[in-house]
Image 1 (tube, rainbow, N blue to C red):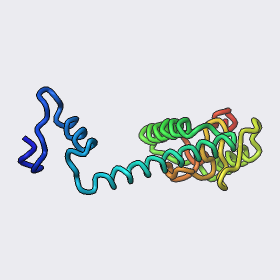
Image 2: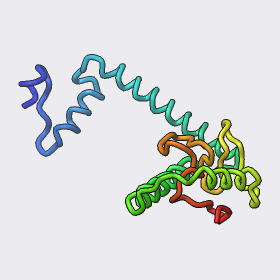
Image 3: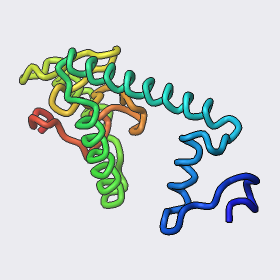
Image 4: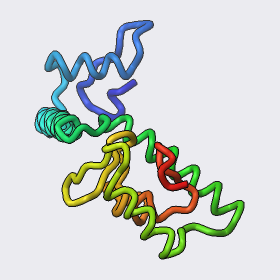
Length: 157
């Protein structure tokens, strides 16, 4: 079966999945695929790098008193949906310059004490959102700029 494509490749035992058999043959050295070992090593290095980056992000967030990265991503998704729904309904996206300045003034002197500066970005300790700029650049600017979004504590009312 596979001999048509890979000369010398043995056929799988009856009832065994072809892909599982191919993986087993590569793993036990029955078949050598050029570059496979290097590719596997690169994948393992990338995985270690991603895990180290994830741990660093979590540590940084925890150090600043911010929610973990998973919570922040969930909140960002929630906020993006709110912004889109609000825009579809009202055709308005941003608050006025006056309202923006009021929101930022309230945030800078947060009555709940939940504001922190992290990486030169004013961020809320409850949701982890960038208030004056977006840390993930998915939303073009910070949370305070969007009419659809409110302070988690109700301070912008």
